[in-house]
Image 1: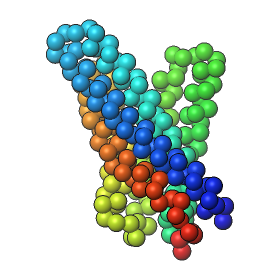
Image 2: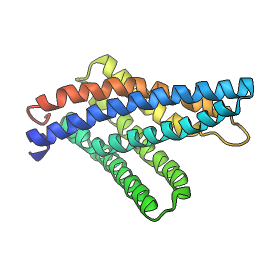
Image 3: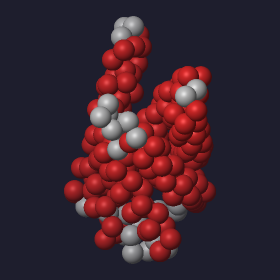
Length: 213
């Protein structure tokens, strides 16, 4: 089957490796964002607050690409790594995650080419919630198919799914600006297990010999 052709496996492994790199950057910029905002609010430093806002924009871009890459990879992981390709429910949500990820890319490119920069953030927030939710549901729905996976991997996958659902809930609003620190903590917590899962996929994907029974 074409899903386990050497080139396809190599692409999947490369995407996994990129996800791990993006996760590191997302966690690092989220940490810096929180630190600068804390310094700015504690000492009344306008420069620190501005730096924190800039870092928030950068960390959110890395988070966006994290979801996009994971969403694109979701169908391949479902069909190749789960016994019998999972089930219909898992595959539907995996395809939906990929669909919203591709829509997110197309929407961003459209807004950039049309000069509607002001609409990008709102649009990305909407699609990030959709793709993140689809990814989380895919992972949780696949829990019964994790029998062959080591226990630490199962724990990391569940942690990733739960944190994907929690990150958008902590989106800062004017009445609760402190949620920005909660969201930073959640993004960092998400990136830690996701980094390990992505690196494991990157390492093992090229060695898959066949589809699981």
